[in-house]
Length: 111
Length: 113
Image 1 (tube, rainbow over the protein chains, first blue to last red):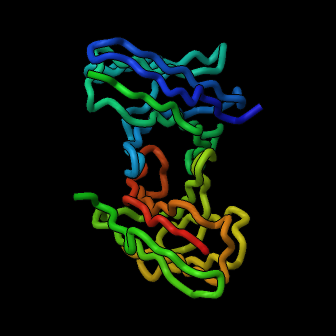
Image 2: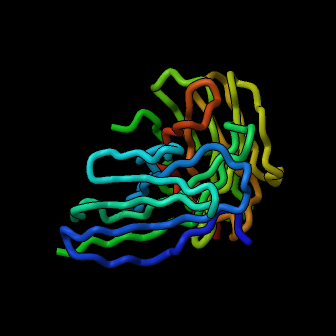
C-alpha cells in the first residue's frame, strides 16, 4: 500500500460545480496534513493545511478523518482557474521535517 | 514574482557533461531543499540544508552533488547523469526547517540525452 494515495483523475467538471477529492494515508500516527496545488508546468503551492477539526478557506474546505485515515478537499462553485493538480501531503508522526507526497489529483474545470 | 528563483529553467545535457542548477531564495528562510519530480512519481526529497548544514541526504546517487554556500543560495552540481535522471528539479525553502509551508521555485527541467 502506498504511503499516500490519491485518485489521479482527471476530474472534469463544469464551472460552478462542487467537487471533492479524497486522499488516504497508511501511517496511522501521521500528525500533519496539507493540500498543495500545482498548476501545469508550475511549482507546487500550499493551498491549505488540514486541521483535526476541519477548516474552510473561502470555497475550499478540508477535512481529516483519522479513524479511516483519509483527508478530503471540497471545492464549491468551481472556477476555470481552479484547474490544476491537487497534491495531498502528509507529515509522519513526530517529524515535522519530513513530508510524504501523493501523486496528485488532476482537476479540469470546463466552461 | 516568486520568492524562490531557479536557473536555468531548462537544461539539456549529455551524459558526460557537468552542469549546475542554481537556486536563490529572497524570503529570509533558514532551510532549503532539493526535490525531484518525475512523471508518474510523487515528489522525492533529495537534500535538505538547515542553516547551511546538510541535514538530510535521501540516498541520492553521488552524481548529484549539492552545495549551500549560505542560507539564501543552493546549488545542485550534476555530473555523468543518466537518461532516467531527466525530471523537474524543484528547489524549496522554509522557515526554521519546518515543513508546515514550503515555498518552491518554478523548477529546472532537465533532459539528459
